[in-house]
View (cartoon, one colour):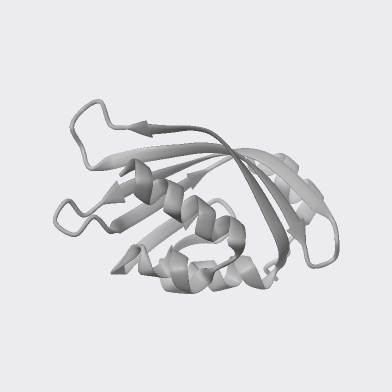
Length: 125
């Protein structure tokens, strides 16, 4: 799981939607503070569409101590929008994996939305 989280974070930082989506089960989904619940294959193109760059500084990757197929990536997300503005925030992504395939079933993204909404506005329209 740790390596899958690292692979996900590297693909996200690179803006490689195809690579990110292949890490998910076909019906895998994401819950985002900005966009709510969406299928992964619909969510990530929206993120990349409004972005001009991303830098992720990984603080930690945590594996479930309860034996669940779950991991958390905790990182600093530096996000440059198409308009040139930059938003930085601490983020924790909670991954649930399919133990049979090793692919991501779901991703819950957690962060304080106040500074992000103040800086980014409604970038998704």
